[in-house]
Length: 518
Image (cartoon, rainbow, N blue to C red):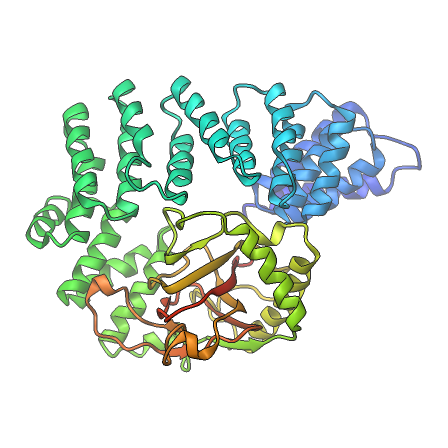
C-alpha cells in the first residue's frame, strides 16, 4: 500500500523519540530525516500519524520551527483548526521571517473566521511575489468588507502575470457574487490579448462561461481561441460540450462521432447525458460503467442511478437503497440556539448572488469551510451533527465492496469536504444536483418561513431522486422531506436532490459533506 512505508518509518521514529532521555534532543541529521518522514505522511494523506510524530518531535525539540510549521499543516489537514493556529503561532515566534509559517498562520485565521488581512499583509511582506499569499490577502480583504480593495489586489497581479488562472477564477467569482453579470469575466479577455497562445487561459475563460450556461459567449470564446491556436483537441471537446448541452443535437452527434476514439472524462460524461436525452440507455450505461474505473467515478454513479431506474433494473435499489438511504434527525436545538446560529449565518451571507459553481437559484451560499470557524455555536452544532452521522452510519447495511456509500470504512474520525450555509428567498430553490467530492451529504434547517408562507406542500421540501430537468427524463422523486427547524437530513452524496421552490420568506440552511474515510 502507498502509505505503508512512511507509516512504518514513523513508528520507528516515534519509538526513538519516546526513548530519548529527558532534555535530550535529536541531532541535526535526525531532525531532518524525521521531518522528511512527516512530510511523506502528509503526501500519503496520513495527517493523523504525522500529527503524532510531529507532536513527539516538538516535545523533544521545542525550538525547532520547521516541526511546528509542519505540525500546523498536519493539524489543519485533520481539521483541528485551534491546534493548527497554536502550532503556526509558535513557528512564527521561533522564525518571524519565515514566509511559509506566516502564510499558514494567516490562512488558518481566515479559515476560522477571524480578521486575517493584517496577517496576510505580513506574509506578503515576506513573500511579495507569492500568488497564493496574494489571493489569500484578497479574500481576507473581501471578508472584512473591503471588496474593492480585494479586486484591486487581484487586478494588479493579473496585470503583471496575465496567465494566473486562479486569479482570474477568483476575480470572476467575486464580481459575479456581487451581482456583476456582464463584465465579470473581463480579465480573461485582457489576458488572452496579452497571451493569445495560452491554451489554458482560453479554456479557463470558456469554463466560467459554461458554468453559467452562457452558450453564445462560450461559442464566441471558442471561435477566438480556434483563430489564435488552430485545431486543438481540447477546443473540439469544448465545442462538443456546448453542442450537447445547448440542444444542438445534430452537431453533437457529428462531434461525438468525430471524437469516438478519445477516452476523455469530459467527453464521456457529455455522452452519457446526450444518450439519456435520446433514450439510448445501453450506450449511456456502457459509458458510465467505464467511468467507474476512473477518477470521475463519483460523477458517474448518479447517472447510473437514473439509467437503472429508467430501465427497471434492480441495481438502482442496490445503489440508492430501498427505501433510499435518506434519514431525517430532529436534533435537540433550543429556539435560542437556533436563533444564535441563524444570526451568525445571516451575517455571512454578504454576496448578492451565488458563486459561479453553485446550484442555488434565488438566494446565496457562503464560501469556505463553515465548520472551521471560531464561534462556540458552530462547535456545538458540529458535535450534535457528528452524533447523528454516527447513528446514520450504524443504521446502514453491512459494508459492500464497490458501493459508493457502503464500501466506506466506518469508525474512523469524521472529516468534512465542505460546510456552508444556503439562504433562499421567495421562489428560491436548488437545481437538482449531486456532490461529487462528498461521501455523505446533508441539510440542517436553521430558520424557515411559517408553513403558510412556504406554500402548499411540497413547497420548500427537499426532493430526492429527481433528474436534472435539462435531461428531459420522466422520473418521479424517491421521496420529499418536509423542512423543520432543528431537522438534519443525511443522504448519499451521489443521490440527486433539489429544493422545491417556496412562496415567500427566508429558508436558512446549514449543510456539509462528509468525506469518504481514507
